[in-house]
Amino acid sequence: MDTHVVIMAGGIGSRLWPVSTPRKPKQFIDLLGIGRTLIQMAVDRFLPVCNKQNFWVVTSANYVDIVKEQLPDIPENHILAEPEPRNTAPCIAYACWKIHSVNPDANIVVTPADALVINVQKFAAAIRKALNFTDGSNRIVTVGIEPSRPDTGYGYISAEEKRPEEIVKVREFKEKPDLPTAEEYLKAGNYFWNAGIFIWNAKTILSQMRAYAPQIAGVMDRISASFGTWKEDETLDELFPTCEKISIDYAVMEKSPDIYVIASDLGWSDLGSYSSIKENIPMPEDDPIPDGGAAQALEGDNKVIGRDIRVFGCEGCIVHAEGTSTVVVAGLKDYIVAVKGPNVLVCPLEDEQKIKEYGAGAL
Image 1: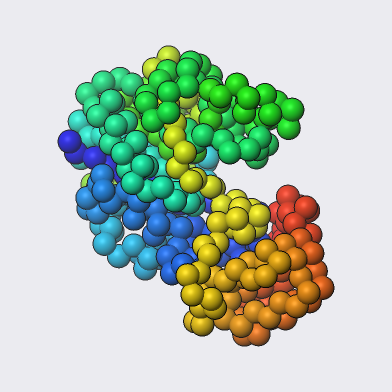
Image 2: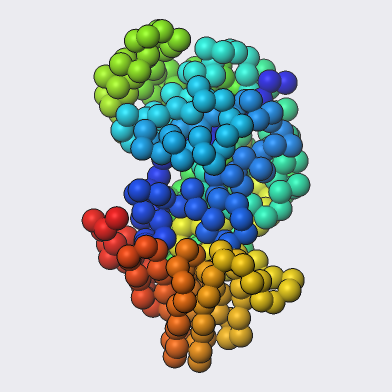
């Protein structure tokens, strides 16, 4: 089986300002203080199912050099630069048309760059099962996460039945719910968080895009005619921005009758908030860890990342100050303190959904 992995790495991570900025967003940062950035961890978790030479990264032209630096083993011509962001459907189509031009029978996994998966062995087993299921068929599998709480921050996948770690038919996709609806989903048992991970073969996704997103497919056919020629970059720059700006969920997943889900408890998080970072900072075996960038758990359920973080009389706080010198925090409860370069954020955890607007326009 010829498996390829496509990593989507074009987001700007604005909910994690100032640690994540448009200049260097969260997928390229060691958010948990463990010595690996999120995109490096994404590659790590797929190595059991895919050769490094078959990884592809779709990112902004602004981040190509960062990708090369952090993932030096990935072929340079597998780092695909979008001229401008057009949401996930054009991003995915671009990579899949490229892979199809190399091997029309390839099997493909598409994944975001910026998530965390703790149960990596179980994850690899689920991906293998999905690849076997989609190999040579017209079926698509998406990965569902068994919800641990009624979360309103994720989209949901409704399955026809609950069979953990087995592939079952998708009934429908659900938008981010309000709290009462999320509580109903949790009780029902057949609703799963949508991890944004998709498995299909190259022929399938091209035919599905032609059927349900013909405008994008038409643009990709025109772009693909230039693959491998001196006109490729020029053609991409001219035509890619004309693609409809739409997610793969809206473009294909919600329309196709051939969608399945494999759901499991994978220890997954999109690490899209300081709360989720705080929850997933690992507990050090030996406390403290002396070196810069290390993560530490302190008394009072405080979590810190940085070289010299001093916390006094605090409770439930996260202090993220990697790359700075001494940071002193005293007398706070349930607060975020984040420092990156000249920018500092001090904000109650309960207001973290406002961080995107707080940091708007800042570098």
